[in-house]
Length: 353
Image 1: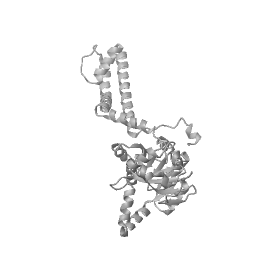
Image 2: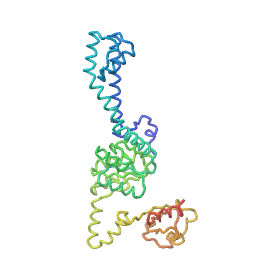
Image 3: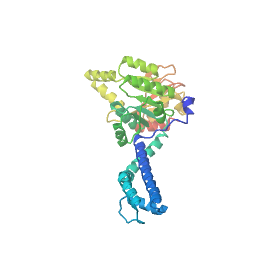
């Protein structure tokens, strides 16, 4: 849960995507300039040339647009001087305003604006999603894996060029600093299931972890660490897991020397190969009542759904890899099952509540 001062803070500004903000500002400026020049022209013609309101409005429009129609009434010297200055000083403003407004509709900017707004509204409804901080190489890979597993996510990235990249992939994207409270709140951290911090700068990663943990104490936080020293700091800051990518890469390459088939197998079960294999973590409470307090052999998960139990975590934290069939599933235990996408879906439909 969020701290009370943040939950009740109605003054927290809801940021919009950068592109949307730019469009709104441009249109507001163009509209304001057009209104100001039009009002100036109307007032000037009414007082200088004694025109009625509608006559002054008509003269202002044809003067600013340089259409060239005749005058409603003959202009005196004062009126001619005013009209000349009105054209000289406001022709550029009028042209700018028309260009901005017409390009917004004609060049498809309106469509982009509406699309971004629809995406923003959908993002506000996300629950149990993952927040990915950083859209570099690691961020790209994480997003691809989340897509493979049909898991919703929001990307937070400060670099402008990454926004268009994420837009082309149809990802939910927020431009900003993930260590900023408001940005994380905007990404729905109160409703999120996990956050993944991919920053290479350890200091930024620590600040992001601290902020995320403060905003959502129950959040699962996974972060990248550059070395063992940074790993300890990140874990103290509140991360559940700190991943040393160099260590994993070193283990991967060393194993390739004499056990290449093992590496290929890991690639497959990690859902990185051509064969689509999925893991499913299931707690005792997620099982239907008829499958609780039973031995693994009696569950017959292989026969009913085609999945296999490859690991069991006991309530006291002990793990059993490739557990024996006579192990009984009890309260507080967690199972890890393995299968392809269809088998996992069958397992969820038949075995889980």
